[in-house]
Image (cartoon, rainbow, N blue to C red; front, top):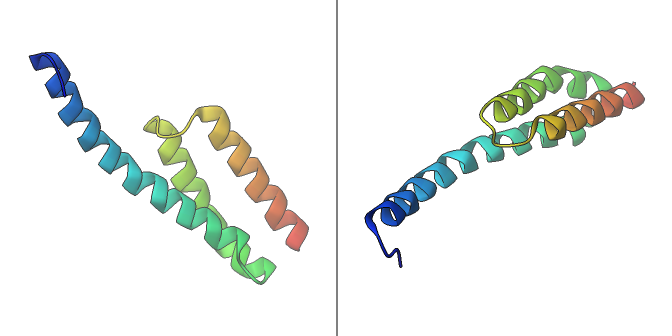
Length: 84
């Protein structure tokens, strides 16, 4: 329970931002899973640009750290390269 006006406002804001961030994070994870779960190299290659874009967007919005985004993108590229 917040004890002052500012704390109650921050509580409302954090709840709203948490819900918004959850949408972006979920979309990013789904795009990454499409690449990693692809059966063929062509299918993985087709889903790769969307996954890269989602990861970059999440990093731009500070939902994930920039280094985490770079690491995820590198792992996706390596996974697609090893499938072919």
